[in-house]
Image 1: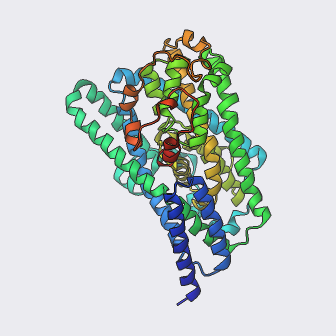
Image 2: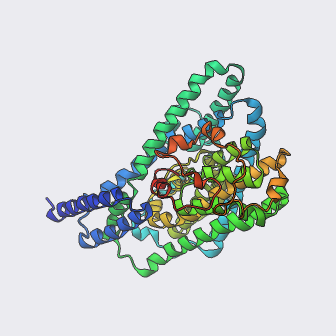
Image 3: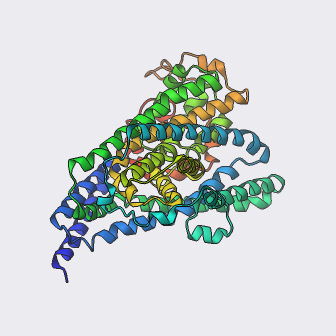
Length: 496
């Protein structure tokens, strides 16, 4: 028996215990992930070629991550579509919301693809030397016709068992629309079904939260395995730094210049005024890294300062945490895909990239406002495209840093979509939008205007603050740029 390997396992388990202690002391999740990275480097260096008992701990994380993909996609789509309550609302507000959320995500996908290819993200990474397999990639190369036909379910049970995500999404959308149509005629009979979906959603979200909390430990184990096989040279780390910088660049370009053009052209509103009024929500999202946790701020600002009706703000903004999400479902999966393609030296043509764009867009129908959304969506895209999942694991520490920009991008897109839906419905209140109260109303001691009640509509939607948080949000967060309340910051890791 390899004594060094057993010693490496014992040391790793002891380091796990240390990470657990730090977690109980409310150390930031991103900080924990970085600590896991550096500890993994140390373990891999000290116990080089003797980590055969440590590496399976990280591989188990990958299996758990894949296991929650299908349930997460199913409950996210079902709860989003059935929450509308009637087919008339589904056709009008729901259809417009989904259209704009997906359109904004498509713009993010195209922007990221262009930036990543132009800047050569992944070139020089030499991923083949870091334990990423390339010999089996040829098995996944299919023609466009085969890929297109694979989108449609033939046996939904086998699709779920094999994690064929695109057929799962299409089948789930069909079921959700049918359920909404039946509920429109027989609401009493469908009420138990909707309650069951809501309950199942809460259970799945909680399970996903359990899995994502294992990320720092998985990073430690997987990094140890990678370091034991290669020396992390500067020229190997530089591509990761490029990935980090391009991730921030893509998120901020999409969140501000791209959305500014969209607001001016299709929303007929002044982008500078919009960004000034929505800034508290952006800052909260950037700081807490929680799209769902920012919902009270986002909906409050949309109704009180931007002039979006409560029913539209209360539906489109929360829907934006399950559909679209350009930061987590657009920028990051596409950026990692290009990183993998260049780092592995794969031959990709226009048709291959077109399929990749379509995959990223369709997968964005099944995102969810829970921790680790970007990792889940990237995993889904990689699995559907036949790219090795090990690339995602190698970039987890970088992902933790980019998550701040991704969350800001997600929240901004949801707010922009709400404005566009309200404008196209002819219900955007320009008097509220043009009112110069975005600074004076929130000054300390200033009289507060009557607030549109946004809690009731939000609590009827798939992602509710009551379901997502153990403690209520501080009232100062609703419409105010005050993110210093510690309960929100401490609980931000529980939700996305």
